[in-house]
Image (cartoon, rainbow over all chains, first blue to last red; front, side, top):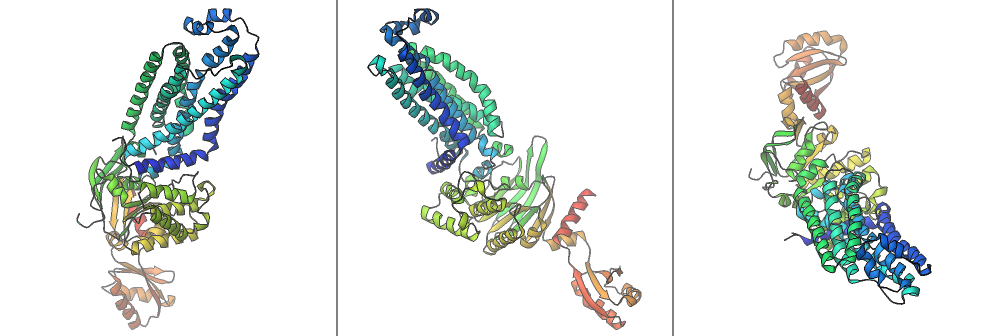
Length: 270
Length: 312
């Protein structure tokens, strides 16, 4: 069994969610970044793309990978720029949201408890190390998924709405988009969490954890950008495989985290 | 070990090269209040963590309420209440929410939890701040909420780490009274502190820790007996008869030492019951005695004598 006492996990989730709701320092980056990336940017770029008078993209296509160009080139010329921006160029940005939100919340859940000197009280409660760890992971993971999925819902509405004058149809989400949202994004989130649980074990403050975690996560963000661009033009099978690889990395990191998450180790660093 | 609330045998813990605690042998009877005294870094908090199964020992063993905290930490923690040195309250929650959270983890039945929460916040003078965020509270108010939280599940053993640090004198008195009440009701209390006043008021026995080692353990009387031979008594006498009094008392077998003092005489007798014979002798010599005050060593005297012994 992953959890010994579900009530312990529920109680910690209630405490952490209540605390998150009341913390501007945590809540604002968690909401502003997804708003900019998934609402504002698609709206502005979408409007610009729809107002452009059927530009000739052939010179741009020459510089893009063949896999990206081929499906777009098959579309009518007036739809090409809209689909290129909303369907392909903006898509990778989506993966940054679950990665960032899970990292911010994990830093608050683990290093933040040490910084606020609340960790020791948790350690003195009748709860197993495993239940404490699972609760802390879920208190970062669940909001990360909720923010990502709600953000994606907003993106779909915005992208389809601003593109309607050109597209006259709902063109998002595609199958690959759905795979990204429900398979790759949760996997990316698990990687962010895994990294931050490891980083937080070595730091005493949220700021330290964010700085150190950022150094590890930024390359992952860039890697995900490149990878995501490829995902969208490759087959769903590759998306599934990439998600599986990320899940493997994320779960391995979390397994390492749970092994290191012991009262003895934590009390020594409180 | 039968019947003891707490027992440790050779308990020890290192952090790398640092000896946080070594060879601790401690017994605490049910309902007893034992003070762990010592400066910062003496090993008080480490002892508390070891007893509650938060740290694993690397030498010796401990039993709390008959359970081994290193193998049955959750069993021990279900029956202990802990006040950590830093109150450790979630600042973004209210006082009530902090207690409710702890009660839920402790699996306290919801209606009992509500009742206990209200009663404890009332008892600790925090009822009017129950729904305020911890963020806006003073150190003393936080300490009271944290103490209420420690008492939430009617613990058999209370582990209190500096319960009055940061409190004003009135609040300190209230907290000390509360701990005294709990002890009177049979709760075992292990009190880690460097405030000797509260330890002297509350503790049946005291252990002096110094750099991870226990240097003395017993009642203040036992410790003073081991530190000093005899009882010091201050006598207020007619100063003009001071020299004659010293001469008379020097002859008396029950007087171990006598010297002049500002108010008259300072002497050492083997025990309290020697005082009447001293007074009789002076009366017989025609020397007026205005007062006789046995100087029982205070906890402070004992503590500093132990520490001085270590320094020597």
